Image (cartoon, rainbow over the protein chains, first blue to last red):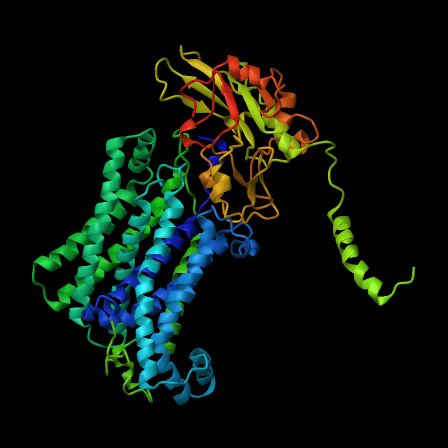
Length: 397
Length: 243
């Protein structure tokens, strides 16, 4: 292999980047199911999905920042972006999604509660809610209707934006013509569908976990619906990946022998065993089984939890195999290198674990500040909150 | 001259500009060098390369290349009979200290020096998110290390494996075609020390450069032409097994 290729350039942190943005995009798409496509059954997860998307989106730039050789220069991507670079667009795509879509939608959806809470709480919490209210205090019927209409419009824009956010990540890899493992026009589409799969699975698991922790009953109609959507998107995602694989095997171009050997050796466990068998075929089979046969609620919950966990592992393995797998072989197609993950370094395992825990901590704070639960209607002074399930505000189309 | 408030206001901006130049230091002297009159390239004459490693050593010394990384390196190819698609390639320490003898099994052996191809349509320039990698008007791809983020996208984008992250500066690095030398009328360090003339710096815009005659009379190729990078390192006598 070329001697400079011995060292791997993109570490586990770059594996986290598509994994995290995928969760963001997927969670948002799930939220939009209720808002735009009127899938009422998933309503209990609407706000949780939005907060999950925000928690992960806030962490998304951190692995990139930690990976840079000169993190102090990262703002140059905003100030002097190189227009021909796919990567230069990251900052703008990210900012658009954060400021133009997600924060705005969450704020509009929670505005009434925030205003109420800024009036009913005291001390530091009151200050926090007053800041979050951004000076707004009007909770008249008319203003809430405007919120609703605007929120719907933003979700409409948000769907292609979520596709852009993650499709763009796929493009970063798919457009590298020097790397046959990455270079594929299918890459952005595969990334979008795998994002939906991981986001839906993550929100499903979080919904089950948080409902259980709060001692509440899981809404089985909601869970069944989410699981069904997970199955549909997973089948599309898997079909696309298999199509890509089939094309590669049948074409068998100059890189094939090298890549084929890599899959049968260094990536055998992470790709064939973990990603395909354990993380894709098994959850699809489990979810499919739930559609065909009748099972009790308890059994379904357990199977959904298992399928959700396997899905998360499978999608993480997919990101790993794309990012790390794409650097294990030489561009001369002669020779391979290995990835030795460090432990307690800037780009080590410990940092990666911390970065995966951080969104959950942020989500916990967000949930405490802005409870997404249907019964949050019982908040002081908010007996009929919109979107809380108590008195639904009529949604405009 | 009496310094009035009005004069001071007029003089201050001028003084600031002058001070900026003082701080910037004296540019290296490159008398009469006009960027637009050159278009740099390199010719590698494979049959002439003896794999001595002088070029790798000279490059490392001239450019302070960190140990274990290479702006240029030499590969030894061994092709057994008809197995042109499966050559054996080795490059121990980039060929810096030459190569051990190879067992003669009837195949062919030859050396291929590698370096940045100074592509006219370089993927590394295209993908750099801040434009720290750029192509000069005289056709050399350079990295501004005071601007590079160290994101390493360029390293991924280079089809030839020519780039690395300098562990000292944490910025991307590659062959500069000894830009600091060629703008002063010198040749590159690797060409300077090559004992057989296997490497030759070429100026494609200079009609008197012998490269033109060479290109007319020899069968030359570039590496991975299907990548359409506009590579400007030309290889004479390159076997089809080279990648």
